[in-house]
Amino acid sequence: MADRPAQSPPPGAELLVSPEEVAGALDRLAAELQQHIDREPCILLGVMIGGLLPMAWLASRLAGDFQLDYCHVTRYRGSQRGGQPVWLRPPSLEQRGRHVIVIDDIFDEGVTLEYVREQCRDAGAAQVSAVALVEKRHGRAVARPPELVGLPVPDRYVFGCGMDLEHHWRHLRGIYAMQET
Image (cartoon, rainbow, N blue to C red):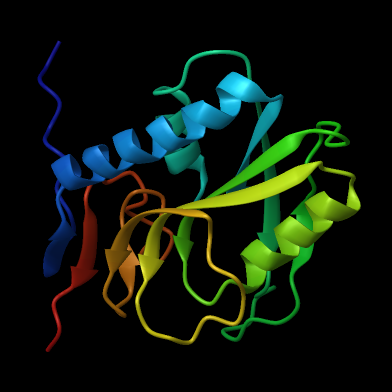
């Protein structure tokens, strides 16, 4: 069996957060989440597509009894400007009386995250918390930030760790941006 090639970003990419720093942030987030899992029934709800990898990486660090679910929300519907969020796929598990922990890749302005939180509350969740692997630092947020954030990133278009560059490079374990010219 041939050796697998190392994960390498596209040409012109600049590493902003190393895979080791990402792993450390995931360890810290998992330690915080473990406290909730130890004391109450929890659902980890990944927001697709970006939340897929952060949710899987966090779940693999957790012990005990919790459930995994996912939802898919869009704001763009073929446009370059975001509109009102709509479900492409709502969560499937019963949320009534449960602590739903929404997991996403990035907190930018927070429109999608707030929509998911509101929908979970409307579905009867006893508590709704949010986790984002990264938070973009810019001051344009229109919604309440997540209760847990792994890492800050600059106000640049970032990819890797679930975030994409033109629908590619989500699988990278570090966080990158294209070099500024």
